[in-house]
Length: 330
Image (cartoon, rainbow, N blue to C red; front, side, top):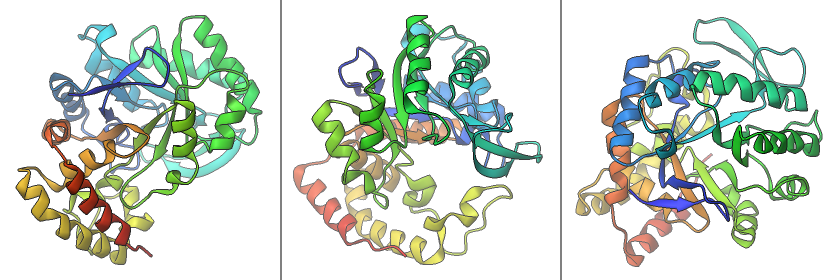
C-alpha cells in the first residue's frame, strides 16, 4: 500500500481508503453486517488503514460497523474519518431530502451544523465508533442555516479537547474553503471525482494544489458504473438509490461501457481488472490525495486494495486521458 499526508498535517492516510457508505446499507439496498466487518478487516490486512464513514450512513449503522471492525486493532494504526451535519433526528436545519432508514421507516434528513449539533454529533460518533478521538472530522455538506465560522469554531473546540485531530470539509467550493480557513486550518476537502465526473478540476483542484490541501476523492468508481459490470437494463435491489441516479440512465451506462471497452486491452495487459485500472488512474490525477472506495464483502475489498499494484506509464495515462476526454454523457 502507498500512504500520503494530508496537507501540512502529520495525518497520513492509505491511498486507497475504505469508504463505508455502502457498508451501512442505507440507500444501497440493505447490508449484511458480518460481511461489512469482514470487508474492512480484509482491507486492513492489505494496508488499507484509513476508513471513512458518517452518522447518516445507515443512521448510525456504518459507524457501529466500523467500530466493531477496529475494536481489536491498535488504534494508532488506524485512521478514522467521519462527518457531521446530516441529521435524521432533528426537525430543523435545511431540509435535504426525505428517505427511508434501514428498517424502511420514512425520515427527513436535515443539513444542520450549528455549534450544539457539532458537539453532540461528535459525542455520539465517538460512542458508536468505540474510540475517544476522531482523526479527521468533516462537515458532510454545506449548511446554509449556520454561519461557517460558527461551525468551524465548534470543531476547533473539539480539537482543543483532543476529541478531534484535524478538520476537513466535504463538498465545499474553493470559496467556502477560504471562508472556513478564516476560523481554523483545514487539511482536506472530500469531493466527488471520477472519470465521468470531473467538475472539481475547475476550481477545487487548483485551490487545493496552491494551498497544500488534500483532496479525498469519493465515488471514484461512480458507484459501480466504472467497473464495466453494469449493463443497460440492470435491475437494482429495492432501496438501491442507483436505480434513479442520472449516471445509470441507459444512455450513460452504454457510453461509459463503450469507453471502458477501449480501456479493457490495457487492463488485460496489466493483469488487472477495469476497476483497478480506474482506481490507479484516479490516484494519479493532479491534486488527488486518496480515493475512497466502498466494498460490501471481503472479496471486493481485496480487489480494491490490490489496485495499488497497477503501474501506469506516462503513455498509459495519456491514452486513458484521451478516452476519458472523449466521453459524453447526457
